[in-house]
Image 1 (tube, rainbow over the protein chains, first blue to last red):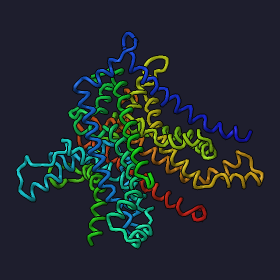
Image 2: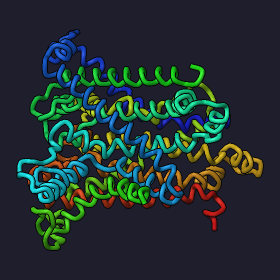
Image 3: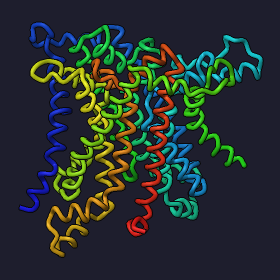
Image 4: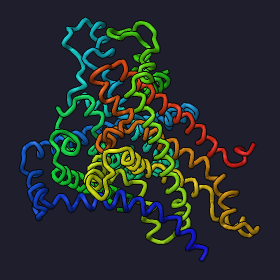
Length: 278
Length: 263
């Protein structure tokens, strides 16, 4: 009887998620198959997603952009995470808590900061121009794809750093010494000891990066509006702007969720394979 | 030496971008490399312009409401789940923290608009929908923090000890458990508050005219008036910074253990 009462504590949580997350998402999945006016079954909206050029481009752009941002974040974050654990304790704690700040920071603030820093008249651009007496039309363009990758690294690098710092902290140094004492060459230590230990954490970090980036759009929207064609931006415009078309937005959303599901699944499969003994 | 430079570079990677809106917001104008003049008038503008002022109030109300909702539903759930060793319990423990990862905010926003934009459930386009959306986004963070504090506490042992001394469920909660999980809950509350104050994406999808929050005003002002945008951005930076300082302080206390906390 005592346990019954305590299980009741779970009810508000489950009811809230059921009513405001599960029901809307299921409803969205159903509505993406229904014609808006006649309410008859249709595959039209999904057909659009895979045949209309601007949707196909959006999917391709989203995949490429998310991969680029995640790779930059994953590689740089691993490097920074490694540096972080070699720092003295108080410096490491400061760095790691500072790197948890972007997590709560509005995407619009980041957009604003980078417009002032690296925009057409951005401070850094002006400094570089003056220093090397470069022409006025020579500047780093944050409104281009590579520029957006740089802006998003403000989020991605710290996120990966936090993951990888934890992984490096758990790396048992005596394993490395043991492998050296047993006569392993450096590449063997890397191949058989270090990479298998780091891989699960690295892939988990990479999944967080990829899944997050596939759905991100706030900073892009603030910087370039709809000028960059991403799947998330298409969904946003179909839900809340002039191109209002809810069933199409629903089909695009379901596509995005499936895409993220596939990415997460593939990475978790890879993680299992890379595990020692896998 | 090289390591110190590297450390400074890694710090400035976050600090320099964050300084931009702050410096901008205190300057009369900033067209060239150096900003000129000192003023507080852009902050004053937030308070005197009716639209930004009401957006500021809306943001604060929404953030407090989202913190309360997530807290009231996750703290009891974390308590129950911490004791639940069934596959169902484990599944919820593993899934709830990654919900925003599997269902990104943009799809949740679309789903909310679709589900609640026609009778009998006309919630979309007002401040209630914004509160619910922010609660959904904040929930995984709140849940993760509350669950973690129950885990590290060894709550069952404490509860059993209290029960053996004759405390009933209510007394155990009020005198034993809640005081001990408080730092973890506060960390969760601060994260949810900071996320809610800055949330733009879903808010702009579900907010109608009555749900205008500060970030929505910021989005407009980035195109219209960079000076007012700078003051709003700075306000959001201060907010994140303050919760970051409070979280660091609380985490240090949690690591320090209950004895040091009592002292």
